[in-house]
Each structure stands twice: as structure tokens, then as C-alpha cells.
Length: 366
Image (cartoon, rainbow, N blue to C red):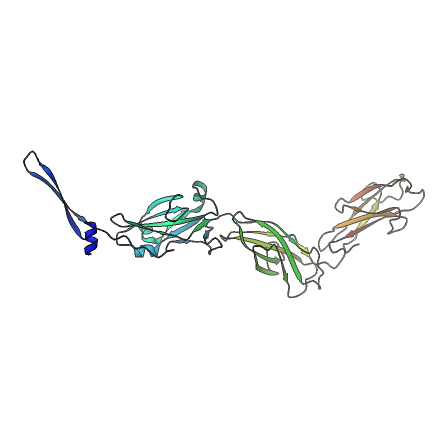
């Protein structure tokens, strides 16, 4: 009857089906049953591919998926609803392949949702409670069912849920010292990581951490880990510069890190005080030992950055190291002691001098 109705163009009309029995009832009457059955032989129309929308989501990436970084996203199918027959209902599911609901079983959409206006999905709940791997590509399917139970499925563009931003693990200036009024280029290197891959980097420079008021953000390809920018004029003396690196993944999540400050530097460190003797901060005129020499210091400063190295030497005149050659000391400790080798002992009733030299990152010393 269904086939005949479809062939005759009477789809949607009513036909009567008779059911009779080959026996007589106790009352002697023949048993006959009949019913009017509407026939629907035409399947719902198949809307154009990609008619299922997922919002919000970033533009397609190299894996051809729409990446979602919102805690809640919406599934909408207005084009599907517009193509559906009157009285049709809709079901929504999420799976690994087209037409599959292995992640989120098909569920009926009702009310405004059933009209294609959207189903809200808790992305965090999918990640926490269901078999959804963050960053893995999945597909949303909407099924249209007519009154006879016939159905057609329309799939969304592939989607991937990614709520975790990349991590910038390091950011540092390539050149550790600059000359104000001469240098006009800033360079930065960095390292970053993300399980789902990094789409690109954005790099800029600012006068404070996370600021880009000196050089605005510029986009750098994802396979680059170093970038330089030329300024309109030479660097200002003593002005601090921070490199700001932002790593962006396919879902639009980003992680950011600022480097330590780098200042253009044209002056050496400011020399402080030097004290001979075993007591820090007290300058001794005489000492009993001829083999052990001690020194301490205070007030050494580097206005444009930091003192990167300091050496100490002992000599028979100021600035010389003919008794003990210049050797590295820790500028942050503030004191040092050395023991002279045999044959190099200090002579009695003789004046000796301790000399300190401090240098900054540009090699300028005091």
C-alpha cells in the first residue's frame, strides 16, 4: 500500500486496511476490523551539508575542525529546521564520526530548541564526565524525524573542545645590553608548549610587564621562536623594555609571559666603598696574618640593570694585582677571603691594596 501510494502521488492520504478472521464468533457474527491509516512514503528533505552550527568557535585550522574554547557552546540548526516537514522533531547527538552519538547519545530537542534555535552544551562537563578528549575532533549530528518515524541526519563541521591555554615557559632578550642613542632594534627568544599545538605567536615590547606600549603585538608563525623589531628611533637611556610573548592555540586560547626588564645602558656601575680586614664594613689599618686577606664592600650600584660580574685583586699599589691576581667574587655576597700561596706571603710593615672591579652586561666597569 505504501509503495502504491508513493507511485500514485497520494503520499499523505489515508487508506483503509481491512483485517478479517476465518472463524465465527460465539454470537455467530463474522469478525472484521478496519482502520484508516495515513501513508507517508517521502523521507524528510536533506538540508545542505554543514547546516548545523556550533558557536562560539574559532575559524577552521589545519585539521579542518572548528575549535571551541568556551565553557558553554551552542548547537543550532536553523537551515535543517527550515527544510523539515511540518510536525517534524529533532534529535541531537555527539560522536566520533558522522551520524554517531557515541559521546553524547541522541536526545530529543523540544520547544525553541526543536525549532533549531540551539541547544546549550556544557563543554567542561563533556570533558569531565564523558569520553571527550580535550582537543580531539568530534562531530555533532542533528536527526530530523517525521511523523512516520523516517529520519535523515545532518552533521556539523568537525569540532574540538579545548579549554586549556598554551604555556610560555621562557622569554628572554637575545641581546642582554643595549646602547642608548645607538641601538634601535629589540630581539626576543622564547619557548612554549601546548598539547594540541600552537597556531601562532604574538610578540611585542612594553615599558612594563604585559604591556606593549613600545612595540605593539606582531604575529609570528608557529615554527618561529625568535623575533626582532626595529624602532622608529634609537632606544632611550635607562628606559626598561620587556618582551611580551603570547602563544595562541587553534581554539583561540592563549598563554602569555613577559621577560625581565632590559635597559639601554651607556654608563658603568657606580663604585661603592671597599674595606680591608676580617670585619665586614670596617676598614682595618693593620692585620696580624701574612697569609690570609679579607675584603668587604658596600654601595656598588648599576642603575640601568644589574652588576653582572665583580673581581678582586691584591697589589702593592692601588689598582694592581701583583700580590693576588684578579679573581671573580660574588657581588651579592659583599665580602671575600683568600689565602696566599707559600712564597707570596705579605711582608711585614708593608702597605697593600685591595682593588674591586664591577662590570655590567655591556662590559662597562668601575
